[in-house]
Length: 515
Image (cartoon, rainbow, N blue to C red):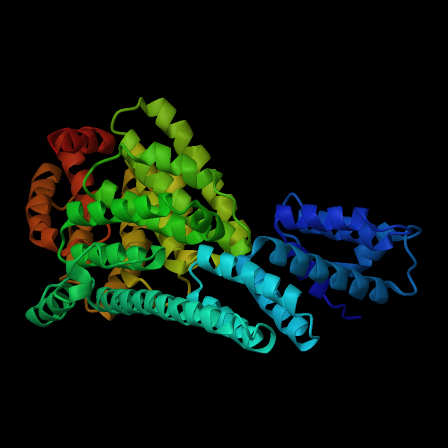
């Protein structure tokens, strides 16, 4: 018999705070609470230690046998589902200012229709205060218009003066709304160009970007009049700086953006995911210019931010652990090998658990970045078994997909290097043939990947003196330096480590000191 798993899926989606709130609500009810027993068993099923939880109603009914009535089990499931939804609505209204705005507006309308005008006025005042706090000026204007209607009905003697004040307020808030919309429009245009071109490499793209930057809105930092306008202003400048390859400028503008957020803590509390994304962008710029001083303090703040939904949890996970990886890769330049090896294992285990837990809520590009960085991390530490483990995860993540072909090629290249390092002669011939077939199919035999494969095969088959082959390999790699391809830096460092007969990590540290 096929059983519905709707309740199971809903329970699976609940955060710890949502479960806690539901149990608090349940505690307020009197009488039998069979539904709470069902909830606890369902939650236990969700939280199985192996993490591979699946719905099994037969097992669930067996566990609850004698505790709840079995004849109306489906009724109990539906009842529990309804209670959870009611609890979620209540919690959402309590925590979500947009829900509160909707409720206050609805209350004011109902009270007006019932003729309870004084209470309707009070609801409108509360509505305006909340909307002003969060810059929801559309609703402020609507509240002012409703207030004007009420005044015209109830306060004939005072109407003229108060209606004039309301008109002025509507004009003022309309201007603020126009200010926000203008800056958001500009930000969206810059963002669209950034996503389309990434860098201003040709004259047409440069001309488009220059035209946007010369607009009056971008020329005066005093023109943005609200939190949202200021965020859009500095975000636009940060994106433009990235397109112009001016990383120090981009870092400066992202720092300005975070300083704006610092002045509006209620926005940080209401929109933690957005703050995490902007903070992540700032720290990525810091990483690009080798400035790791802000990492620890800001990362600790991001870890302490309360998140409200499973999507916010996933957003926090994928950004925070990506930044942790950047910080870790810098730390291995200075720390003893034993301590960084232990930290790498802990970090990778947490990432593996997080990817499994959050599943498709993690953006594919960020999942691949986490996998790629983990491969590089263990490659640098010389832990080849872990490298192969995470290379396999890249293959699994991209199985049957044409996305991010450069990452697929990177994984195959690193796999070849590891087979050579481990002396896996049983696998290496097959791996070479498979990869060469793939490169011919993609017409890449003369590209970076093809030339790397050529030299790896030359070294593996000992058809040329190893030292000579490595020197030729190093020289040929230099022609690809401007392309910034995944795996290029790792292959260059690996080749240099073989020429100097030192570890990969030692070459990384030498380069870091030189930088």
